[in-house]
Image (cartoon, rainbow, N blue to C red; front, side, top):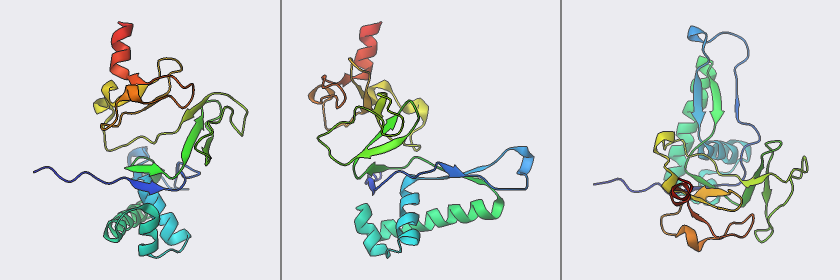
Length: 194
């Protein structure tokens, strides 16, 4: 019997930083060890400890059940405690999440910004003015890089925009938010190039 699929957790904003490093001391063997804090764990800490929401309120914000939120919270606090006590660096990335609004990344300056108005696609970066804008999609660290196949990606043949393939949606039924072209499965595009 296969386990039930994990429900995606809603995250309001990506964190402003990608992690922390310990100050002073040296790690065992000279190599810094890391603790990976998933984005949903970061969001739970932000909601419960920074925004002072109770677990019921935070669970509604993240669109999960209260027991699920409590498990995520306990795991996040254990990871943070491990990093503080053992002097490990904290890296914030990955997880099974979706953002509350569309987020974009500038390839020019690596700035992350959102566009609350879903009907408007930004054409320039608000920070540096570059036109190299792509949709920001967090990497799901639970899937090894070797298992992320081209068949799991929808791509625009015109501008190169990529997004994760949704099993319930055909790529050719979707339109590129950047240039308006019809998307196609990446492995079909690669087969055309051969």
